[in-house]
View (cartoon, rainbow, N blue to C red):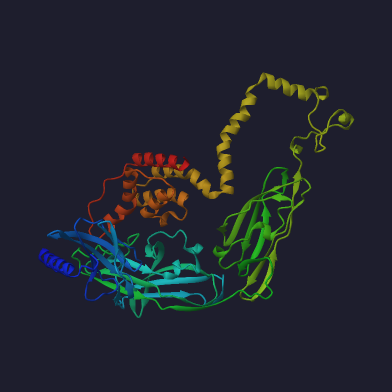
Length: 601
C-alpha cells in the first residue's frame, strides 16, 4: 500500500521536476516494480500535472495483461495539481510485453504516453501441473480435419485452484477453421467442468489417472482443426496460468461448474496463494496443398472418403406441391467438417425444379451429414429427380474420384387430378375438359341422385360448412409448426422456446432446483443465440441481447445474475456469502413473457 507520506513526497518531487523541465510532457506512466513475472501483479501509475482536473485517462485494452483500476489521488502545490491514477496489471504470458498505451486530455490537449515495454519472466512451474497437446497426425492436406486433444493433469485439488487462465492461440487463429466434434457436444454432469480457454468457455471431461505412481486428475477437451493454408505450420504451445490457494480444499468430486476466473480476487484477500504455470510442447505440422494435377473443374472441396445418398419423402405429388429432398454424406471420419457446394454445381436442378440458393450447413445424424431442402417441379413432364455427383479428394489414396447417386423417379400429377371424377363413356361428350385435359365440374343436368342427395345434406346441415373451417383453425398452428420443424428447425425452436420454458418452470424438482432452473433458462436463450444451453453464461446472454437491440430490465438482469453468476459465486467463491433470496417463479415467467414479446416485435 502507498502511504500518504510517500504520495506527498512523490508529488513534491514531480512538481519540482516539472518546473525545471517545462518542455517535458505533463503525463508520466511508471511501472512500479523491480521485476515482473507471469501472473504476478504490479502497479501501473499514471501521473498528470494540470491546473484543472483532467478527464479520466483511457488505458488501451491488451491481450497480454489483466487490467484493474485501483483508485486516484490528488495533491496540490500552488497553481499546479498532481493527479495520480493507479492500476493493477497482471501479465498473462512471459516475454517482452509492451505496456498499454495511456491517453489523457489535459486542458483540452490530448497527451499519449510514450511506448514502453517490460520483460516478463515465466511463472513458477510445478511437477503437480502438466499440460499435454496432441494431434492425430502430423502430416495432412490443406482442408483436411485434424483432431486436437488438450489434457491438463493436476495433482492439486481442483477446489483449491482459482483464477484459471488457459491460452490456446490456435483456437483463435484465422488460418485455421475450428470445430467442436460431435462427441464433445452436450457434455454435462459430474465428470465435466467448464474451462476458460482463449476467451471462451469449453466443457471438458474430468477423470482420475496415475502418472509416475502419483494420482492425478486429467481434464481433457478436443477440437477439430482444419488448416486453410499449406506449408510447415507450427501449433504454438498452450499455456496455463492459475492461482493455487493453500489450505483446506473441497471434497473430491465437488467441482464447480466453472472456475473462479477473477485474477484480482486474491490480491487483497489475505490468502496464502501462489501463481503456477504449465506449458505444452509446440507441434510442427506438414500441410501439403491439394494437388492441382488432375483436379476436376467442379471439385467440391470435400476431403476424405465418403458416400453420397439421395432420397425423397414422397415420389407421387401434384404440380405446385414441394417435395422434400434428403441429401446425405456418409462414412466420413469427421462429418462435422463437411460442407456442400451450391446445388447448381452438383446437379441440374434449375431446369426442372425450383430449389433454394442456400440449403444451410446441414446437421449430424447417426454419423452422417444430412441436408434437407424443398424442390418444386416446374411442369408435369418432370419424371425424375436428377442424379447428384460430387468430386472429392481422398487423402489416403491421394487421388480425385467421383461419388454420386442414381436419379429418383417421381410422378407429377396435373393440378386438379385429385378432384377428377370417373365419368361413364356415354356421357363424356356432354361434359367439358379443363386445360389439363381432365373431366371436371359436372353440369346440373348430368348430376344423379348422389349429387342431389349431397346438395340436400348441404342445405339441411350447414354445420358441415363449419367443420372444415374449425378443423383448419385447430390444425393450422400444429401444421405450421410441423412444417417449420422440417424447413427451419432453429425457427421452430424459437417459436416454442417460451412454451418449453413455462413447462420446465412448472416441473422444477425440489432437489437440485437451481441446476434445473439454469438448464431451463439456458434452453430458452440457446433457441435464439444458438449453441448448447450448458455453454451459455450470463455475459453471453447480455451480449446477445445487446446485439439484437434489446435492453433487459433491471429485474430480469438481476434474476439472470442470480441464476448464473451469483449462484456459482455463493457456492464456490473463496468468500462465500449468505444465499440469495429464492426466486419468484411467477415473476420470472412474467419477465420472460415480456422478453418474448420484444423478440417477436
